[in-house]
Length: 509
Image 1 (tube, rainbow, N blue to C red):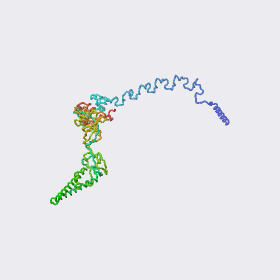
Image 2 (cartoon, one colour):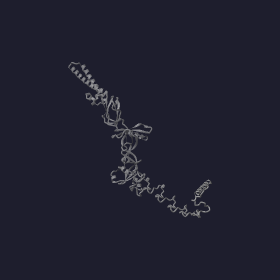
Image 3 (tube, helix red, strand yellow):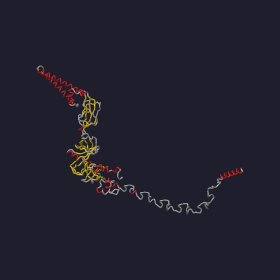
Image 4 (cartoon, helix red, strand yellow):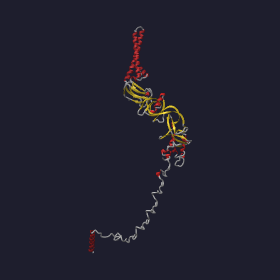
């Protein structure tokens, strides 16, 4: 039995080896149900589709058998039979809307509302304002949410109490010539304080920008030369006293017939010479800035500070210190500048007028000073009166303008030299012109406007053109008619309401 099994294994291994060498399969795959069958002639019996023409009939297991998909969608497709290129899905809320044509979505509360229609509401006639309709399908002027777009404000009794109005009226006004320029010091009100003797500065009591009064002590200088002058005066005073006594003695001897007349004359000459020297010494001290009181104190021997050579530097005028040239401990020479002081309660300005206005201005200057007003960037709401007093001899070739000299009153000292100015000069005869207080004027970017009272509770924005500004009034050239009741105080309250759109309130722009 064992030999038979061994023989079978050997035979099987030999057959497998020979099959590999011959490159032929030993066994067919038993898993192929069609092995050995000629499919070109006959389908196997196990083929469920045997005898069927697949080109004409779909298998029964195909749920779409017999359907032409090229012409009809499957029943499971909810969009069967719909042309998607022509029709949007029902879930799209914007179906049938052409957004490219400029129509807003239905979710936009302001769909179809053209804000550009109100861009120039301030220039629009009042009757047109009341015809406008808003997106809420009512008159815009009656809509609490959209009224501001027309520049209209409906006020409460509380707001009304804070407003003041004035009717546009005609007043006598002169023509104006405008100019630009710069403020300067008035050189007639400028002083440089210097030391009249060489010495050392022992103290300084002021700083740059300080306001000083006339006679106020600014610094003290210790000067050996001044000490010698004070001592010389004391010496001359003593010599005069001695000369007086000698003269009295000689006159007494001559009266008693004991002394000669020549001795009396010599004593009188010595006395007069001492008096002259004292006078010269006092005048020299006065030139150094000593007052009569100080000199009398030196004469009497009571001024110890002066005898020590201490010189007080006093302000020669009321004004402001604009420059301190030295420090404590600095050595100063005779006539060396220590302080610059100027009175800025009155300033000078150089205004530049256009070449086309030169003949008019010069003709007016020949008659007298020309009055006008100026403003500055630092204080744009403040107007300062000025007078044009003279014109320069030549033009500025680069700008083709002529400089005019102006005097500027500056009692509150707000204006400072170096500031740029804009102003106008009043020229010619007065004419009737429509005017308003400057406080009525409001601005929105490049537009000037005012609020006009329409009725007790409604105020309208009206854009205006300002011809000129004269003092605290403006001359109106267009925008409102004479007799219009204009808000002159409290206009900013109304302005804040109509500008809500720019701050995100109301209708979105």
